Image 1 (cartoon, rainbow, N blue to C red):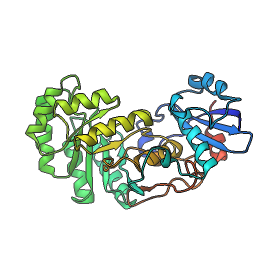
Image 2: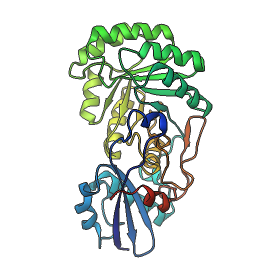
Image 3: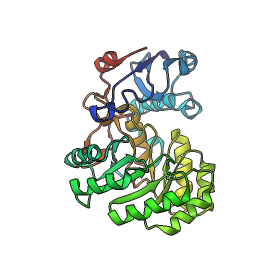
Image 4: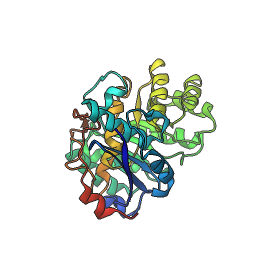
Length: 334
């Protein structure tokens, strides 16, 4: 088998209206399609422009996709090559990562920073759609009022993940807000509340609140440092599939649950890749941040199966998805 063509499609799919009011565009997305002379096709996705991986795409042409080490490639091409391998051997992609431990993967609803009443309205939408948890890009000046209004709109069972992206900055502010949010009673996790250059602050905050503390980390060395500092209850893991596997294994050894964000506001291609990986990670028990539903269209024909706040792990060969080229061409910019 030989790779005959590699196509890169840079697409710009606007966010759904509530998000688009604040962020009309959220980072570049490029999809890669790897075609073979035996008719097998593999797909991948990355954040960035088409030009970023044009040289890699060109270098793959003429090679045997089953003879390459997929994990030696940039991760979007790792995904595409594993997709081809799975289709060739009739195996779902998660079989290349290890033993499957779950057939459904929890996922959060998501909101960008908004006014409290707007976020509360979005929480009602998320609850109607079956989600159980709502991830917020939080800000110090209105997060407590936002949490209160969300609880009023949805009740105490709809939980909140507070992610200020370190905007709370210093320990006194983070500790005060944690105390006020703990009184609201619906906050399920406090992620990256402070600057991340002082893990001792995180250890101290962890001692001051019953809200679980999490860091968003990538490299396994960062996870190891956080575990040694005893400053986290949970961890949000990103990066390549290989990196996530290593980092998750470290967290598992310390009995620390994790959730995964390989794509964030991605399309269904990268979300499917992440879901396959999460199906094999024993401690990936928390709602993930793969959010193709936050854009006005998805490139999958039918999309990933999503119900009651869970993705169903595809069972077909490879990624187990079908891509809609009509949607790609509609939103293609390069």
